[in-house]
Length: 150
Image (tube, helix red, strand yellow):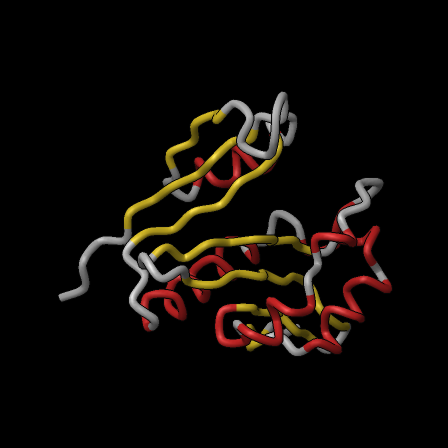
């Protein structure tokens, strides 16, 4: 079944939230799904759509200093291990680069070993920043420079 990565619409995020556990399991991350990000940064918020619905999505934007920041990325439980996360990142990288991004950045909790392994597999450097999300709230910060295009 073909998967097409396209810009996200607000209705897509509503669909994702209706099936939240298929993407996030027992972790309740609904509050991180800021519809304003989709409204304001539509070209860098992406969904991977197939006949059976949204298989994965990425919410991101480009900062004024040229950082392509990935706020959320998730694949549906039946799409994990298919390379879809890598494909979403590739599509985001292209969209972010078109807006002048020269580097990528993302964060995750220190306990999220799957995210750390995934991002390292994509070539990101990972470092723990203490108090990143407030006192006593360390986060893993991922960064990767984008090579100059010819």
